[in-house]
Length: 164
Image (cartoon, rainbow, N blue to C red; front, side, top):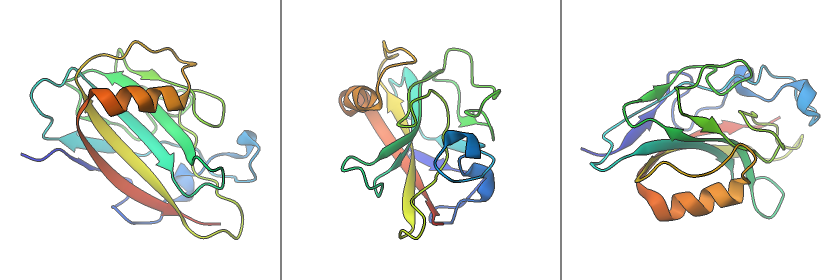
């Protein structure tokens, strides 16, 4: 069985709704609701000790993309994150940890590409990980990515688009 990810919030390749766009208080000029989308996964390989979820914009004009969401240490018996789980006041599974995004805070930070730029791709990726990561809330996204590159058994992605 293949490892797959899906969402009730959007289909692969769809434009993300304003519900998922970052809110005005982030200071980037967008005025969405900043609600993390629903994600569900199945087909995790044997040996999975935890899951991680990331949202990454490879089209951001930074030279290194932009990390919008990082959740690690999701227990291996969990197969979905509810709508809003990564948002302020959301309910993540016990043991899961959100780490620092490129917005500078831990937790979901939705899309907000530069006005007039081409549509950006937002890659929501679920990783089946072979251990529980020894990281903290303020661990930088690049360090999370480094760990995931060496400790992932399988991964699956779904892509949303956004343009303003």
